[in-house]
Length: 323
Image (tube, rainbow, N blue to C red; front, top):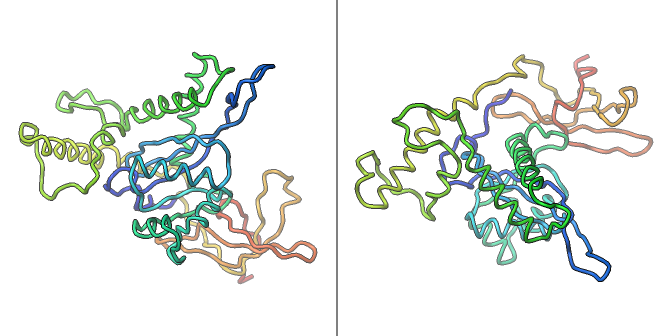
């Protein structure tokens, strides 16, 4: 099992390193008609802070690139610019990344592109068929689904309008951000519960001032009170919450790294095992710890040759290149 990404351990401002994904849809009333009402579908885009685990939800009216860009702009307007965005390889995400030119190597031409370049924002994509690499936001989507379902059970979802859906998702955001990150302590010396909302309410637009802030600052000027509370949060975050992320319950054995030229079998859960295609490894991407977790494979079928990016969990080694 790999080490945690550096952005998961960074004590920067909330929503500096962000993971995002889309979930839904829901049928909402688009307009009233003489015979009843016409319905349309809406989705939700979930943004999660990689360090504080706080979430932010925006409503999408379609799954195309333009709606994805609009959701990103609304998120930036409310939460401030991010240094890194991370997601899966959804077509709307790839299209938005290409249209906004988030990549470092691409030239910035429009006003928005120049703005993003000045902010130093990049967009990283997980390889296809690797949902476990996005577990940090997949987990929060599951939590948001359960909270939203419980709200809809108490209210009539058959006449769900766009305004009502936005209100429900705002309530879901508040409930999920108020969850405790660690078990609630019985120690009377701990005045508050460690939650993502605790830090979001103290977010400021500029970096924290230099210097140390102690309990004595709680009784001084207001700006020092805020910095003291923020320091308390990050101290508890590092002492109590970070150790809970270090447990490695699977993938504890060391195996041979896949190498260029290996013959592998592509695992496809939608077909029977006898129909899994053979592939040749063309590139192996080595992580910082020297382990290969992502590869590029080449598949030949009839007269066509295709290349795919896959995690090592989706392939089975048949014949090493030295054999």
